[in-house]
Length: 170
Image 1 (cartoon, rainbow, N blue to C red):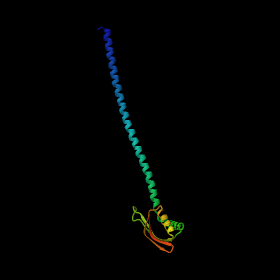
Image 2: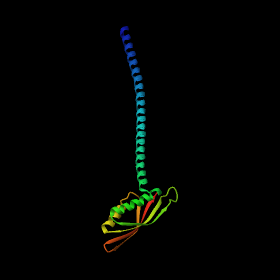
Image 3: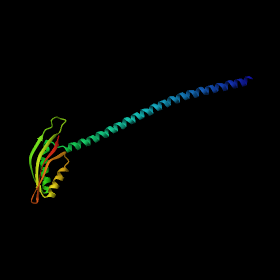
Image 4: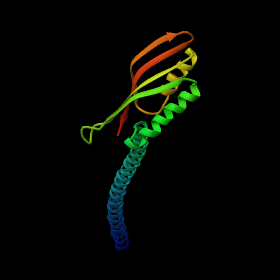
């Protein structure tokens, strides 16, 4: 082999070696970048999960606020007892029955985690339609209530009804 060919061969081998080394260097840089991209992607997913969890917690808090509001509206406080009795009398007038509230007991809650109880005896009379309308209107009140010991009796054209109404209090 002559010198020119040998120089060309050495130059070609050197050039190929430089290209191989530079390719290996670029591959290592790219793979390091890919690892960083994969880590960044994982961090983004973690942050998205945190955001979703926060959104779910916020939605749960809003739902709990709505439920709490409904519960508070379904309970009667000691300050509202007189207004509640007035409401029962207004419903009686609208239903065209004569109502008498014989006894009102307010039982305080035993502790902070319990509910109190407002209990009252109601006696009312009127036509069968009026009596049923009055009972239906009481049942439709938003408060947590229970009708106990209901008794019906009829004299002439009127019906008389007696029952105990219990309402949960806060």
